[in-house]
Every structure is written in C-alpha cells, then in structure tokens.
Image (tube, chains in turn yellow, blue):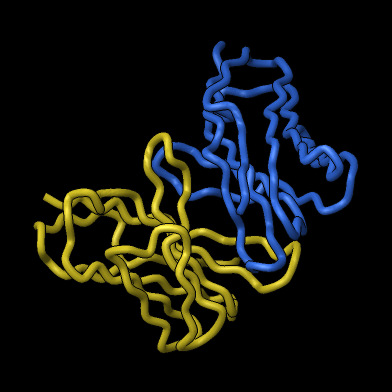
Amino acid sequence: DVKVTQSSRYLVKRTGEKVFLECVQDMDHENMFWYRQDPGLGLRLIYFSYDVKMKEKGDIPEGYSVSREKKERFSLILESASTNQTSMYLCASRTPGQGGEQYFGPGTRLTVT
Amino acid sequence: GQNIDQPTEMTATEGAIVQINCTYQTSGFNGLFWYQQHAGEAPTFLSYNVLDGLEEKGRFSSFLSRSKGYSYLLLKELQMKDSASYLCAVYNNAGNMLTFGGGTRLMVKP
C-alpha cells in the first residue's frame, strides 16, 4: 500500500516564524512536489524535485524554499511565515514519465496568525 | 503556458448521470488525469487518458479528444458519497509535472 505522509495535519504559527513542513514517501519515487490549495484557486505548484538535492521552482515559489537531502523526504520551508501563507499544503510523489500516477499526502492545514 | 478550464460547481440528483467537462490548452500534452477530492482530504486518482477515446472503470468513465483539447468525466448511478471536488490535470512532458484545473465541486442531492 503506497503511502505519502506529512508531519502534521494542522499547524498554527505566528507571523515571522520559520516553519518546516515535512513529507515522506515510501514508494522510492524520484519526483516529489509541494502544492498549496486555496478556495477558488485550486492546486498551485510551489516547488518540485526530480531527485535528491535537485529542486525546481513551480508557479508560486516566492516566500518558500525546499530541501531534498534524501530520496524519500521533501521538506517545504517558510523562512518567515506571513498571514497570506495560511493555506492547505499538499505533498505528492510520482514516478517520472507519462502515466505515472501522482500520490498525495493527507495535507497540512497551516494557519499563520 | 497551460490553461485548464472546468466548471466551478455542479449539482446532480442521486441515481442520475453527470458529466464534468475539462478543456485545456497546452504544449507538449502527454496525458490527462482526473482526481477526486473529498472535503478536507487529499486528492485520489480516478483515471488517466493519453489516447483519444473512452476509458471505463465501473461507474466512472473518462473521455479524451486531443484534437479538441477536451476531456470529460462521466459519473453514472450517482451516490451521495460522490459529492466531492473533481480535478482535471494535464501532464506536460516538457515539464514532467501535472498542472491542475481549479476543480469542479459536485453536490449530489437526494
């Protein structure tokens, strides 16, 4: 049974705090992704990674950074959290190439106050 | 760039059939996915189309026309548990990633 896990389901942080969102997959997938999902805006890609230590900016990378030190783990970092980063954050992984199903983690609901 | 359009909301009656459309404009198209997402949960895979035609999987079917940049998801014998958002996503080979539409929120009424 494939699995993508995220470190927290719910998180509340204060403005200016540094926030780490962790994602782990057990499928040996090369590709991993971080999205945020907001009402009316759908899923938007923040960053993705093709392999260990590799990262690419998605559509909305500003205010975020990522780390991929091990194949199974992809971390999203908010250097200085702001209220407009309050959102649902979803991690996903997949095998590269067409047709590879993308598996999502359960999501982290982050509130920045 | 890529542009994916689907209706924001739809309502249907339990036991009925509903069709959710998705149109897309993209370069390097290499497949289209449909995902289901219940409120507060992660999206789960429903279907994948890369060739033209209809793919049937139980009560759910998905259709693709690459020349028209068009897909639909057909849900038959609707059940209350089918109330969810349905996300259309296009795979772009050049970028090796999925781009998602805004999702269609389906409400099934008794």
